[in-house]
Structures are given as structure tokens and as C-alpha cells.
Image (tube, rainbow, N blue to C red):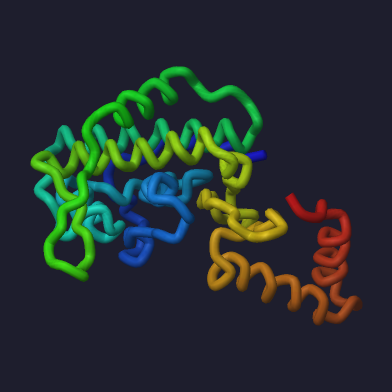
Amino acid sequence: MARAIVQPVTPLSDPAAEPAELEFRFGAGRPCLDLVLTVGERWRRSFERLREPADLGRWLSDAGLLATAPPASPGDLADARSLREAIFGVARSTMDGVRPDRADVALVNAWAARPDLFPRLVRIGGPVRRDSQEPVPAALSTLARDAVELFGGALAGRIRECGAPDCSSVFLDRSRAGRRRWCSMAACGNRAKVAAYRRRSAPLSDPAARAGHAAAARAPRGR
């Protein structure tokens, strides 16, 4: 079950955010979930990474949906944010095992019904380029269709929220056993392993260490 994530998204950049925090995050396992990651720290600061229209164009390029960053309007940015929150709402409901909000489902379906990016042959043997005369709306449609396929398919039950207490990233668990806990083993997973090692290695005569061992013993296993 997803943790309670109720903080509204801050529309502007968090003044306390480091430059590295505002960098785009990828690797959630599906493009639609990567879009959800354009909000940071949903459980606390909930800051926006798509701060202006140019950020949206750059994200669409960095995500591999378009070859170059398209020009985006303030309306495009508002549409992308709305679609993102609808996708997140459905993902969170899926993790909680409850019926998603009808408005979220309707918005995702409405975008999925619009023309999406079409393949364009550039040269024989070369990569296929995705394109459209209206690249931003078409890219949003492509993301919505990805969400529909994810939520309506067998992998819907594999959507997870990172198990780290200071992370709310969602991801698609493609592990064979279906027990992946961390959004990234290189980041959250590694920090959890280091913390567990330090708890095990700390002298039990240390009151703080005893408290840590006791807390670890009481903590539930798995998700």
C-alpha cells in the first residue's frame, strides 16, 4: 500500500532545492511513470521539476519521446501537469487496491484518444523517429496510451512505491520474484544496505545502537 502522500505540488521551484534535485529522474520502468517523477519529494516538499514550458520540451526530448526539444506553451505545461497528476492518482489507487478517481481515469482516457506520435523513417537502417505536426499534445497522448496499457494490463499489480522512508518514487517492479523494494539499488537501495550494515556493526553497548537493533527487529519484513 502506498504511503499517505497528500502534499500539494509546489508550482514553482522550491527555493531550498539543490540544482541536482531539480534534475529530471528516469528509470521508473515506463514513460508514464517517468512523468510522475517530475515532482520531487511528494511526501514532504512536493516540488515541481517542470517549472516552465521550456522544461517540458526538454523533458520530452530527454525521455526519448522526441528527437529534439519542441517549443511548449504555458497551456501545454498545464496540460502535462494535469495528465501527470491523473496518472499518479491512478497509480496510487492501484497500489492501494482501491478504485481510482473517475476524473483521473477520464482525463487519462481523453488524452489517450487523441492522435499520438507517429513513426517517421529517416534513413534505411537508421533509428525510427517519432514525430507529429503538434509534437507536445501528441507526446502527451503517447504517455496517456502508455498509462492505459500499463493500468489495464497484467503489470498493473507490479507498480510500487520506493520503500525508503525519505523517497516516494514510483516504479514498475520487473523483478522475477516481484519483491523489489527500492526505486534504485544504486541510490535508495544502497543507502538502506549501508544503514543496515552500520546497525549490525554498532556495539550493542551503545544505547543508540540497542535502540536501532530493537527498531529493526520490530520492523515488518518486505512490503
